Image 1 (cartoon, helix red, strand yellow):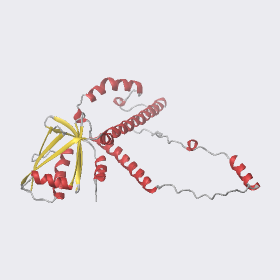
Image 2 (image 1 turned 90 degrees about the vertical axis):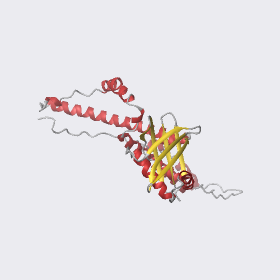
Image 3 (image 1 turned 120 degrees about the horizontal axis):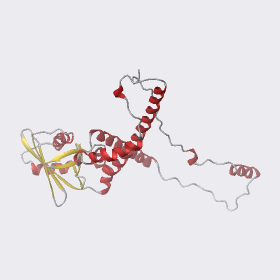
Image 4 (image 1 turned 90 degrees about the horizontal axis):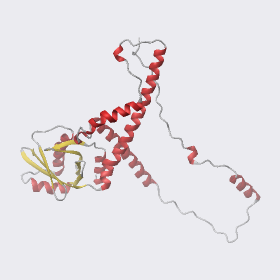
Length: 298
């Protein structure tokens, strides 16, 4: 039986999407299964969520849609087909969403149709626990920033190598066939200063609704997939490792004295140097291979 843990695992690898309800911008992600759903939504000031199993969906569906008689799995399938296009940026004019804050959290109201009859649904979202916010926002964003930083370092190294390659061509007497292709040597410090002074204010002023562009959604998914993979490995390791069996020992009231051969072997083992695990550990260092530029010079 697919439980809440599997739903939560599926939700982790879903990217955040920018959505608007009225004039309010939100980030949202959701996971739907035949056994229930999880919805996570944030306005970057608060984070709310709702997790509902099949029985809760069946009860609420009966309360909100008295004219509808449909199996709960079909109803969940319809909800998924209404919510997921919204998260993908595909607006359906026949479906409307609205939300308002309540004393207990956030209520998201959905109105659409099913088999020619009106369909209503309310997502009752309560404040998300701290560990959920950390798992779906804080930790992935930190890993994304580290990945982007490493990517910038790799590109900077590649640019410096390209400049050295171009300079070598120039010293060999090569000239550009089109002068408009000429570039100045890359200066990392100057680039960082210009980025902070010019590009960063534009990025920060773009608005919170653009927090996860498509490229960042792909990076978020890749990062969370790695985290889910590591979590499965840890879970498998915990399942396979059991408590160490107690060593059976035989107690001798008068243990025999060690023989000469035993003393010799013990002395030999004591003088044998042992290597430390830290001495064996070597971290891989990624090195960009220089590639020969083509088509730049005549």
